[in-house]
Image (cartoon, rainbow, N blue to C red; front, side):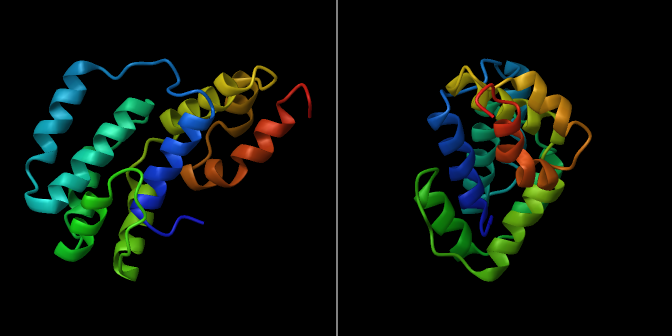
Length: 163
């Protein structure tokens, strides 16, 4: 389902845009400032990709392990990093299988599951007043990011007054 970091970035943005935008929470400005500083520890296009991911996640209320992000995305090849950075959030860059694997590792290992769940549940409920965000978070609590991702829409339907 997720084949690249860019796909995850785009999917998160599309979900939030389609469902009414941010969950309404704002990122702590000191953490946003430290995100920018941490991202600069990796230079070049890898640093641009890291900054893009940290910014997008913060805007979405999703917490990331910045050390994990830096270490993992720092492994991107120069060509893959440039393709992702140049494409930005809305692009569909052509990247290597290795970049796809790195994107999957970021998704699997660097995202805080609780903040991901809360962000996605609130985004879905914000776009549809028949969906109960509290129901979604209760049903999917204590799952991994991958498990949440796999069950999110099915659970949202079950937590809908139309379901």
